[in-house]
Image 1 (cartoon, rainbow, N blue to C red):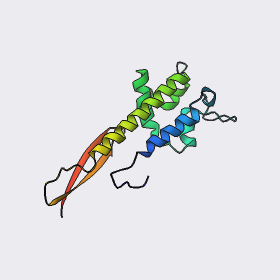
Image 2: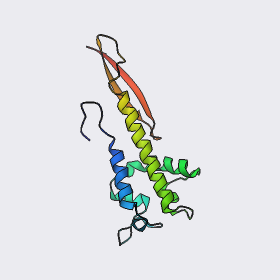
Image 3: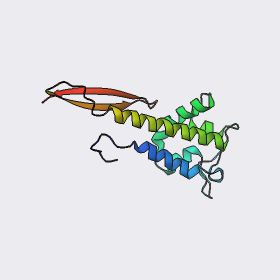
Image 4: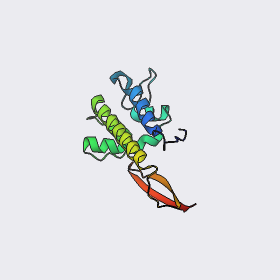
Length: 143
């Protein structure tokens, strides 16, 4: 994602989750027990691999645990659980997308804050931990 002059551009993970939703959004495009089938169906993990979006795993796992109220150890365990339906999977992916969109929006509002007084330059860094929560760090550098 190129640098955006107004701050940091939209988190490309939002685009990646959109691609995952597009790939397995229809029930006949999703599968349990296999990463990929010969007829083009994918499980969640298979979709992440297919789309080079494996860095979404922690975000999706957090959404899985929030939506289900259970503590799954992996996206594969959730995908293959007998209780997991396609509609539940879609709720999880939408929850993950909302979380990413919210984090991106929150991060954008933190960029270019007037934290510094006269004679200094404020650079905002946004650090995301593995739970997709953002932390604002301001570095003050004199001119």
